[in-house]
Image 1 (cartoon, rainbow, N blue to C red):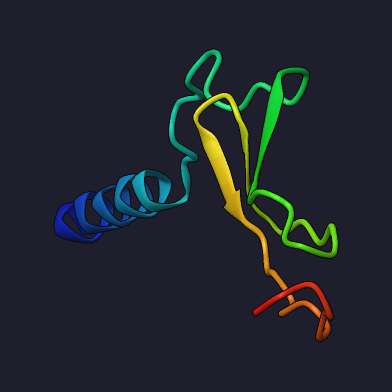
Image 2: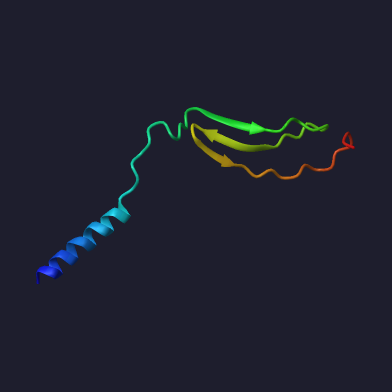
Length: 73
């Protein structure tokens, strides 16, 4: 019976360790201070923004290829 109780407690602590969220890091994602990185405009003025960072959190953005442009070689 004692082994069953100890095994149950060990299982509870193991599950609690898996389910417990990691400690929050202060200032990691600062959504009030975001920077968006974009390419220089091409001959037709098309700009591609490829990444946005808010504090230490960065998201890669998808750039769609620009439509054909007369001013480009």
